[in-house]
Image (cartoon, rainbow, N blue to C red; front, side, top):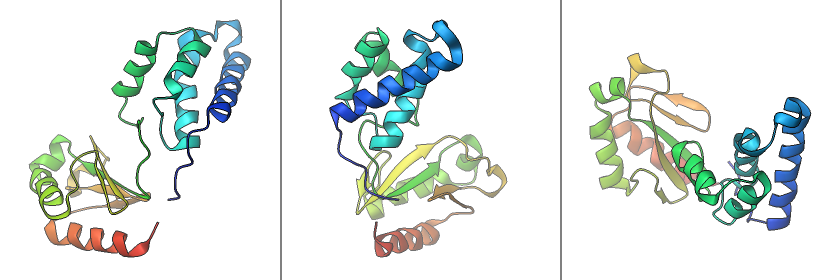
Length: 169
């Protein structure tokens, strides 16, 4: 994973306009307001690694929405971040099946032993709790760099964290 670029208002504005144009090309004149909101937010996150708070007024004004509407969507969907993740994103499953297989114990260990609470970044590793990675029979599960990890225990997450710290960004 690479470092997220700094927020650039002119680049964000151009990206927003491009996404609105693409939505209008696809949906026709019905593509106004909230219709283009999710594509715009996804594009901003892909470009900047997050939906920066500075982008919210630009998005709201461009789509004729309130900033509260835009903020509500960003905060509702877990895939959107308001700050860039670290170079290594650890998506840790906290869904029911993983809970039944001990993910709460592993989550507590991640926080106690490595200082990685949900949504926190330490040593270039960001822990993001997710709710189902589709690996329920082999939980606790996590996803790191597109690689699905299964049957995690304290020793496995210790080795994982040590490996991520040693691998650089």
